[in-house]
Image 1 (tube, rainbow, N blue to C red):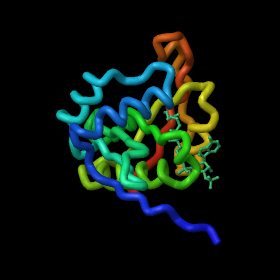
Image 2: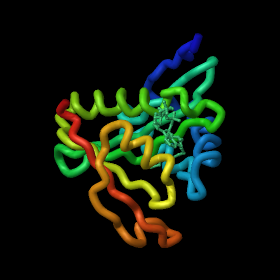
Image 3: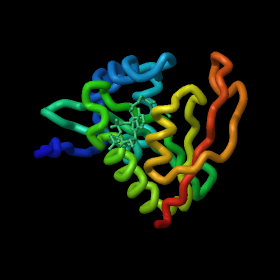
Image 4: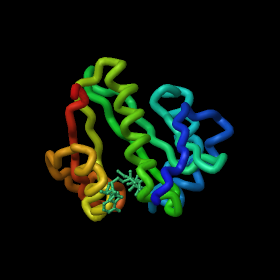
Length: 152
Ligand SMILES: CC(C)(COP(=O)(O)OP(=O)(O)OC[C@H]1O[C@@H](n2cnc3c(N)ncnc32)[C@H](O)[C@@H]1OP(=O)(O)O)[C@@H](O)C(=O)NCCC(=O)NCCS
């Protein structure tokens, strides 16, 4: 029998930021600094969600509304030992509910061309590859822009 892990999604608090920073370091070679995470928390508290499991924060997502009706996924990360347990999908679904409630019709993101796992994740969630953006990242890597409608 497969047991579904109990995961709670809630808005971020200032106390969560050090754990989120440590997840950022496990996820990315260019992690967001604490100052930026805190600025995003202050500016977009309802778009900065965390996933809690086993009494601790194990993942987070940051979404904002840009260009009127377009939501943008700025970051998502799940602690490596908690991956492939639907935590990332649950975070995205909650974030899209928030964006939909604010009137967004479309959600967009950029992902490193080499990050095949994340692209598979987004494809599974109904995103489509739209375009390549050369030199998007500071180290010169190309981004893949992906989008999906959030009306359905
Ligand atoms: C991408 C990420 C958030 C996914 O989180 P997760 O909790 O493991 O994702 P889920 O368990 O919800 O995955 C849902 C489905 O997406 C697909 N998927 C997820 N990760 C995948 C991977 N590495 N390779 C291939 N498919 C993957 C699978 O179809 C998976 O379903 P399955 O496990 O039943 O096969 C996580 O791998 C992560 O934090 N990566 C590092 C940070 C990152 O790359 N963020 C995105 C930058 S734009």
